[in-house]
Amino acid sequence: MKTSQSLLASLLVATLVLPAIAADSPKKMLLITITQGFRHGSVTTAEPIIAQIGKESGLFSVDYVRQPDNKPNINKPKEPTKPAQFKDAKEEAAYKAALDKHKADLAKFEAELPKLQAAQKSWTGTYEAALGKLTAENLKQYDILFFANTTGAVIPKGGPREAILEFVKSGKAFIGAHSATDTFGDFPGYVQMINGNFAGHPWGAGTLCTFTNHDPTHPAVKMYPAEFQWKDEIYQYRSFDPAAVRVLLSLNMAKTNPKMPYQVPVSWVREYGTGRLFYTNLGHNDATWKDATFQKHLLNGIRWALKLEQGSATPNPEVSALENAKSYLATAAAEAKRDAAPLLEKLIAKKEDGALLKQLNADAAEFHKLKDVARGALAAKAFAAVEK
Image (cartoon, rainbow, N blue to C red; front, top):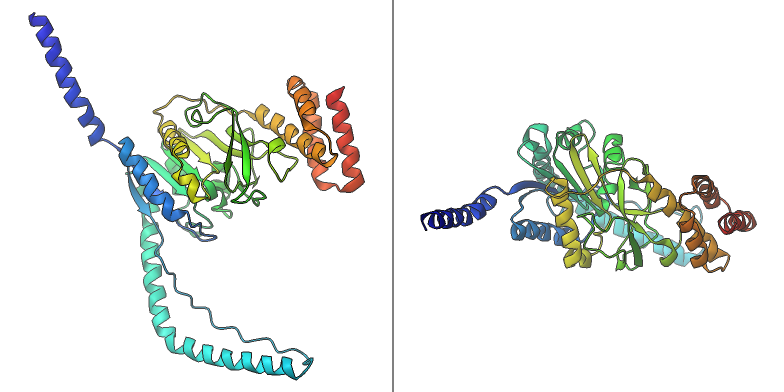
């Protein structure tokens, strides 16, 4: 009886202590939403949702690197261009009216210039203070860096950019959402780390895309089925190296329009130094951030990057090679007005044929450059190779 009471007492102590430990030691996230290029409206949706995910899970608290609102515009009004010769009196009158308006706008601008310059100085000071959190010394206190819909040169050239790379290499977590790949295009180290840089988005915010889940057991994507649909803006990339990352989600080109003859990866993970990186291209639309499944995608991706979840980061270039070939066949079949399904089925059956995949991938790159008859001839060659 005494032993049972001791055991019961121990269990009660454990029940009381364990939640306290979890509550007292959340990880610290630094959430960056700076934009020096296009600014997504969904930034204001993403910030509180990320904080909510951290609070409700008990996993992390959030500190921010934000830019101040209402950046002053100190662009001098541009004088209207005078035509070399007026077509008629109406055009001349319109030019004179535009010139009068320009003079009025210029006078107003010059009168307000001191106020605008003071506002710009204040805005710049606030912005630079925010960037001060991204120094190597300050980053030591954080466990997670999250670049959420950032764009452009977050830190100007000459700033402590390398601190971001060293943060991850040291064993910590980096999370990137959507336009994190449209960030630091002038910083090769960052592009190499995140493994890609924005090269357009043929699939706009209203496109109903179909996605393939390549690793349904991986914690970052196990909430998604093997194939699913969602409306969001999807990027294609330059400087993407299939051998550097483990691709988890790709665009299913056979079931998405417009079709392109190459793989479009959507989410991937990698180990970088002793740290981990999780990236998802999803997140352009407000609806994406509000979606419960996407929120699980983020939470599990963060847990994986913190090494709290098991999941492979082994690169899978063979998946990319097959997806690239599938995208090529799907695009070529659509242009030839052929049913892609039988071709894709035969290709999948031959996925271990390295020579075939190598040739299809080489031809896919050439196909993208060609037009009309030459494109059709190359497609016919691909169909014959797969059907052989």
